[in-house]
Length: 577
Image (cartoon, rainbow, N blue to C red; front, side):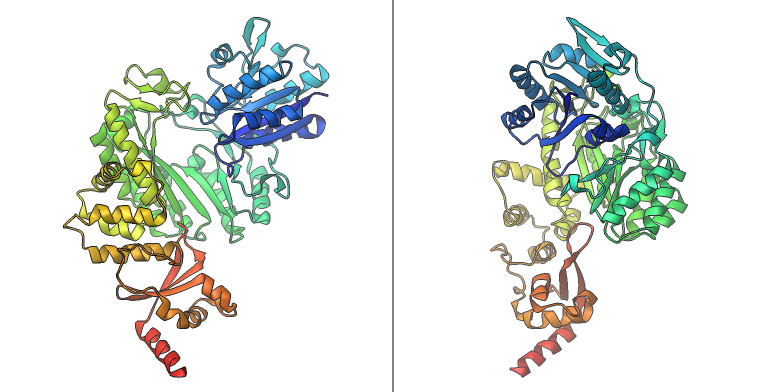
């Protein structure tokens, strides 16, 4: 029996690879064959990964290839082939499925590629390697392989019956400690977006609900922190989505969060009314807007009504219980710098919890890959094939957008400066104008070369705004002080932040107020109260912060305390002395 190693190279340690788990568990492959799975990260040294794989002395190594790891995998395979020339090296995954013959020609250390869905192909390969059934690789579909000096591609396998998918994790989840758990309830996408590989597949297939719901119950029973659905458009079939949402709502364990990629403009009022009833933090939505330029939307084959989408996003936000990520893509056809600024402002005005500003990746097999000459798209030769210029976006504008993206990530998406930004941004012509000006200041000060702590980031904002006559520096300081306190119990404040006190004068009454107003602290030990609560005056409001409980953005929950009540308690404490 051959020793088969399934290997993944994840972007971060907290990520996990769902494909390896499906392949090893499909039809009990892990019980019937000698299969070992190993997960590494792109941050680990190639020599270390090679060393770890060499120690296993495998007969076959199969890698899961994506745009974020394929370049490193090419290096690994070249090294592995030198020290283990008899080892068969194979690839699978979206990065190698569409130009598999060219990939083998360019990478002589790789012996075969599994194209598309891998569960059936891998199972047949196992039987070929261990049982010589079938005797010839040509009888296995969806395979591209070397035979002597020739590269052969077999016919594509029929799509898999998704009812056959195994539950991908150990029952006790011991195989995925401290990592993100991924799950899928469908494959394919009904849309034909020009930048996406999902547009190449025809139609959508759904995992039967009679399989999905028991799977979800396992996550609920284990009280895992988060499950990310990787369905390309989770709510494309209302009955499927609503059945899952209803089940999760009815069986909510009060802990687990479920993340979905959805299309917002197809959500109807019935679904919106239902979503307003679910526990705060139960669901999290990622919504692809990509652009609000009608010409761009048509060019990439999207059919999204932004006005309708905006109205639905606002209704969901009004429920204050679902975290929303909205996505934009820079570098799309007919979107120049100014047009992207309009798209940015449109989305920013919706106040999403996260605004993901990404850059076009010209993926092999996508429509934009085919039309790259038409739109004069120049992009990196190596993965992730990110756009550099287009017919509408010169490289200098791409660079400007890069640093605007960094400002949005650093200050907005971090959730650490929400009150400060809420005060500052309206003082500028538009949200885009604010982040543009901040990015220019960032570059002028050489911040791109520095490591900046949280206090350092506060200092940058202070230096940026203190010359702006429109900024009331006292209001700015109060907003910043509150943001710092929301994130963590203040220990050190920026030197320029001089408004108010430091909360020490209220320490004697903080515990009493916490026990009075926060039920979970009624019988808490004093050291827990000291650690988890903070009382201070912010402008004219006395605010009690609770770091033991946090909102969807990770900030402390808080309540406003009557200034009169705080004063009376302080006076009573003085009288005791």
